[in-house]
Image 1 (tube, rainbow, N blue to C red):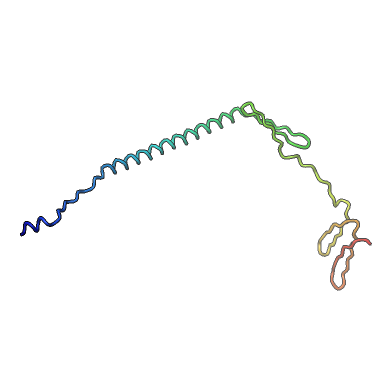
Image 2: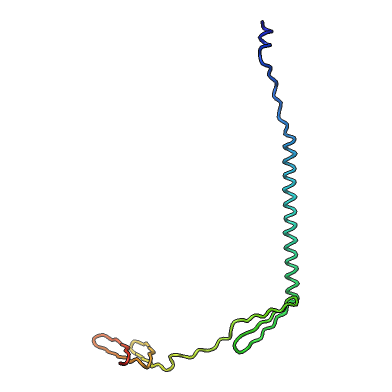
Length: 139
């Protein structure tokens, strides 16, 4: 009876540890692929920087400039690698006439102030009970 009982029990197998060797190989490949990509990217960036720096130095070495001042403007000519560029720089300042040159001047020595006013305006000054000055148009 004991033999029948043992035969009726399901057979259980001992579980084996999973095989991670394929996973380890794949992760090593991924890391190698990423490192290779980083090295290539750094090489491209470094090479680009070097070429741009050399090109800039070459342009600056061959560049010439000339600045000519005229009456109303300043002209700058730049020649770089056989190509001329002309730029108009800031215009020369011209003096503006004084619009108040013909105006009258009101001066108060007590309160120490000066006011310029047009000839079409007259000033009125009063001192009682308070001091004030009024500027009025001629009518």
